[in-house]
Length: 543
Image: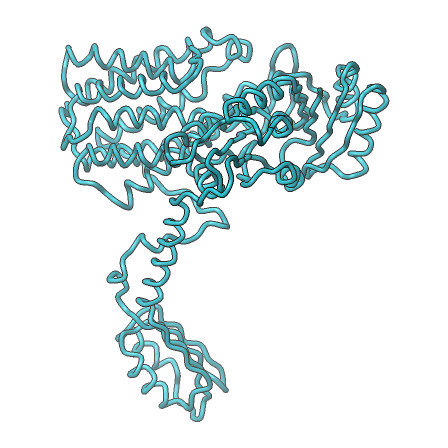
């Protein structure tokens, strides 16, 4: 039985937990109640905890307390979606309980789990049972009981996990929505995968963690290694015009002896060479034996690295410094689609955070947008129920007064902006914006990501899915016109209808949708707007 955990073992547990989440990412996503493409609980948890794994892999600490603090800080920055935010809060509480400890026992694990649960319940405005909160709470309660039986770290963690798996099926019974769908809570199952992998690693059965490939637009982190780590300083490249029949293959062993990354290619007329070396003079002298130089380029990679680090650090510092306020109020909005982004910009939004369905931004992404906004008070519109908690974590992380307007949809965000009055106080504006957005009905049309049985509907992968204020409106098979007509008939008493069509909808199809709504809702003012949003064919705002 393993009684204590040191920093080295804790690090292995974190990396294995991150790997397990990655391995189970899709199975967790598949537990989403509705079979829509943005069922991304697994993705959010992976990205959130992956941030911690990357930090702890690259910057190992020498005590468990420091490791836990690193995990808490990283998951806060990287928190995505409600499940990711709750996971970061569990990590934050654990860090608080283990602060300053070199090693931890079962009692410390139990205390950390309890602190984490307290932090998570405190942060969630209306905690719902049958979720990750329930499972984490009951697991923590069992951990506290287990300490009295055996203070071994292994025993306590195993007991907590066993209780978690025992109560996981009950989440289906506690939550009416889960019961209707016949699934357990995705976030709770993800947490148990994480803890179970950590226990396996404690026992020597590690799951290899491989960091996810960076997105195409990601930049290299030049601070991951120091300038002194560059063994050969000079990147030396040249072309020699051949003046004799000497075999240029003899250059290869010579170059390998005084450098690395050597490449030698040639034909009857030229020889092209690339090598990293500390003595480019010797390389050039040897090359002259084959002919005269056509081109020569020598670059000091240590100097280049130092410059890149300085540039990167300057950029990071700029992101961590609040823009000087030149006005009282500013706005940050999360959305996907260039048409929708333009509309928010036209309404006065300062910073657009790219995100939404299937691409939840992290707390750090939102915080950077807030800091770039040159205002004393910054209103944030998440425009997605799964981004609200991530936005709320930004409060207190900057000197600016951050006001989160809990918009769950893009139409709510647009309507909230229309309610803003520059002459009113921040509190009055918040109240007016929330009142205005409450009167917006949002309808959405997307496609089924998988086969499913839900609420009397038999849904096949690829079917058209209609949502009405977050609830399933219907499954229209493959008949888009029929789905639009049914939705339009439900809006017959509306005064204003805005139809945002997505990137997968042609202008002709969008005009057809406009015609359907104009025919079914003759008394409403109907507008057609290019939104350019991915995943959702149509976003429809009804007032």
